[in-house]
Image (cartoon, rainbow, N blue to C red; front, side, top):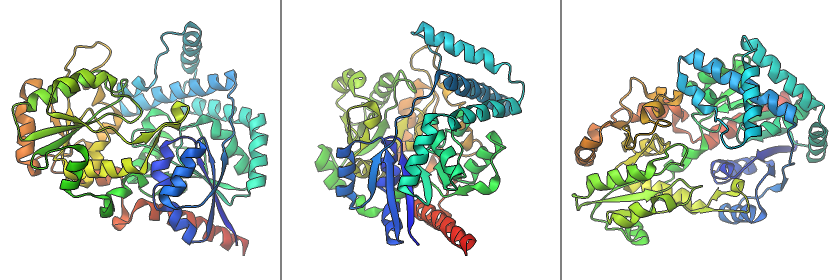
Length: 469
């Protein structure tokens, strides 16, 4: 029996988690054929094939246009879901994920209309009704017929969508369902579900942990429990691959570092998440300036330039800029990590004493290496539109309530003392980071996520064969 899986990779974020992982190697050894639908550029695909030595057939993903009315339905139901989730969790910060249009009057009027329309949805059934209406529109759209044609031509036995956030993949899911082809989507990030970022519906959902499964059932009670598979996430698999690590001396030589010093990592955020990030980098550099045995390694968020930090980098000699190793195609969706960046992040986690940032997922990466993370939890600039007090009330940060998972730096005045204490006695800080890590991303019996995903996909084929017999 031929076994073909169609992987849908809407943008560059799927490269690290799937194309770089050992998932495709494993599936190919098991006799699976792999076909990609993607929004990637040919040089990216050639790089992946050469770097990882994997084979697959591929073609561009159709460009689907969402009608204005469908956008109205989707955004109205999204805002209604955010309000519902906010009430459900008694957490008003969930509504901060509704980004207000400011500089475009026509778009602002459109958004205001969706906000007013959402007020007419008096209960959860109203939200579901609006979403079903949108699916009916998709089923009657040209995109639905085009995806049916694609599925007939490609003839996949299973469709795997590498993240759940792209609304224009709904006609693909509907076409597959009507043709008897099972679909799976992976939940991309640990903060996505409270944010109403599940615009598509598939037959199965691949989640990171029991915690994420319970979230999915709570926010989307219409989804059957038996359609949810706990498989971890491949983005952390690399932390178990010691062959990716360099010696401290090799790493120091590569980046012009002093191997005798202690290194800490300051990982930057994008401007929306942390608009005053350069000031925080300045605070950390100033706090450690009097300690000659410490170097700060600075890594900006991969899709942003270093420009807004440049004056701080120029001023402080105790900061070494180590930029991410990402490539860039012709559009913003074409940013993608080189495999060298996977190695770089691994070595930063391994060689640095701890990380410092504003609520970054890198805290989980460091937890895999038994290293603490310091979350900066004070306002270095007074800003009526942004505050760390709001940031750390975000729903996904409730995952470490009751756990000594991270270190909170709550005052700028005591930052130097705190950072030096963490440097001297790291084992006394964030003593339950491993419990938080395992709560967020499960590795069953220390099995890497790619093998859990592969086993789940294989089980679906075994079930299909049993039904056919």
